[in-house]
Image (cartoon, rainbow, N blue to C red; front, side, top):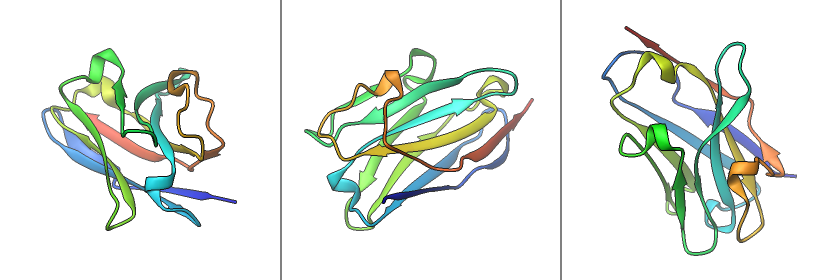
Length: 124
């Protein structure tokens, strides 16, 4: 069983930055396809970004392209979502997801393992 844990959420002013971290117990991040999703109050959980195990191929939801960057540090066994130029509409609970598959249809949200979420609040 893989336990996924997010960290790094918080309260930030519009235009600010945060770095969300994700770890997966029992696995190295290099052996996982991973993604980030977010859920704003009263809304469904939406895809944000993904990185595939196979080839480190990344994908981003259109509204975060150029502002968010997903990456992983194999030496630290952690995956990151750097979020820059934050907007109030980015306020949400951010979830990290992971799967052992080499490639995941990330936008479908079909990941085996999910974290508990990290709150990101952007004030205007």
